[in-house]
Amino acid sequence: MKLEQISLPVKNGLLADYWSEDANIHTFFDYKYNDQSFVERASYLQNKTYDMEQLATVIRVYMEKFGIHSAVEQHLTDLEQGALVVVGGQQAGVLTGPLYSVHKAISVILLAKEQREKLQIPVVPLFWIAGEDHDIEEINHTYTIVDGQPKKRGYSERSKRKTMASTTALNQEAMEQLVRVVFKDFGETAYTEGLLVDVLKHVRASETFTDFFATLMNELFAKHGLLMIDAANGAFRQYEKSFFAAIIQHNEQIAKVVVEQERELMEAGYGMPIEANADNANLFYVQDGERFLLECKNEQFRNVLAHIKFTKDELLDLAKNTPEKLSNNVVTRPLMQEMTIPVLAFVGGPGELAYWATLKGAFAILDLQMPIFAPRLNITLQTRQVQTLLQQYELSLMQIIAGEGEQLKQEFIGSVQDVEAACQIQQMNELLAKQYDELLNHLSTQQLDLQKIIEKNKVYHEQQFSYLRSKISQQVLQKHQVVLRQFDVLQAELLPNEGYQERLYNPYQFLNTYGPTLIDDLLGLPMSICAQHQIVSL
Image (cartoon, rainbow, N blue to C red; front, top):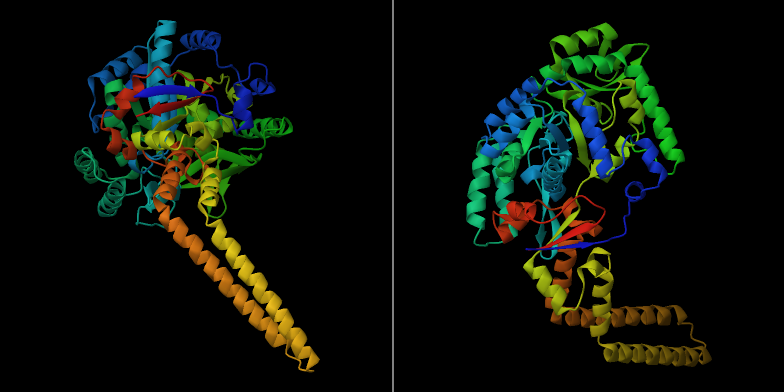
């Protein structure tokens, strides 16, 4: 395994500016991403009070059903004794979801380890599973590569109800069928059978999407001490109840300040990532496993379509007695993390960075500081097959990732076309057209009006010439189909659907190729959070 770091153009303007020391975007955050910020943030947290024993107990009880590794136990002990936390999270996707979920976990673990060494205090990694999210269509599928093209493979079970991932019952038979199809697409290697048996074992032991996600993540990362918590976990909700009350008490102020800051963000040229409005309560009400977004007007919290309505006092009573009936959104989730966990840094992607850029004022309303925002690692995995093909065609990975793959493929197609055959067909077409003109002139001298028929015949012959050209081109391409398929493989592996690999494929595609030590080996590489793109040759 070899690591190379390259600089790629950052398409997200906000992220590009975040990495710039002097950009105006930093006014939207409490900290820049640098060593001094970590020192200051650690000092700030050490002067705050958290119920670390309860937090550690909640996490321990949640993780027990997945198995607690000795490294996890050590981090739980550290947490109980006051360790600071690096947090990152994601929805509960199939087979852990797109690779960036794994990249977030890697980022969280590496950053926690780095800051533990630099600050000389305990820092532990925590993965926040967004099990409360209810858009199952976002997480019920994955992609594989079939015939050199990305192929979407989905879970067949559908529901009209928008239940949370943590309350959506998993049809084990349907998930097993999906997993088998996905592994068949991967192709047989020395690792396939063992991986498949292991994954199917976890399918059969999982009751929900979140269970399936968490048990796989725990297996991949347990020996590195990754702690996990499901945002929808009942015990965690109990721990959060006083913090829900704080959000409800300051609800209108939070909504107003987020609207104001988002407007400033738009005026600064960064768009409106949340499209907030002052009536949004930024909380969901949970009913029979479904989430209903509340709005707030004159201290009345409601969802008109679902016929839900609460006074402020009634919602406060829910927070106190049945907090599991409440759920956060993109605005209040970071606030809740800050109130419940001593967050040294939050690891997120470009989309999360945009959301967080609207929240500095909301943190201040609750007398909080925003934690340091740490952009997650961007990683591209390069299989041995890809390395061989790049070398064979004297191409660089940078060319493919930069989007030149399709252009190079078209240039190759142009280079192998039968130019002589195309010229001869063109000459035949021109000769026939000339003969038609001569015939038309002759008929006109005979006072015969057959122009429409002549034109119709010309069109027919032109169509036949076009058909002949396409058949010749088709046979030429068939002759070179091996090379064309290899171009497709490069594109599908490195820039599928014109996006980064990490946004489409799940890690088991690469575990199937490289082996079950892939995650351990990635965590052994000298990677650290930075603006560069990490290229890992397997």
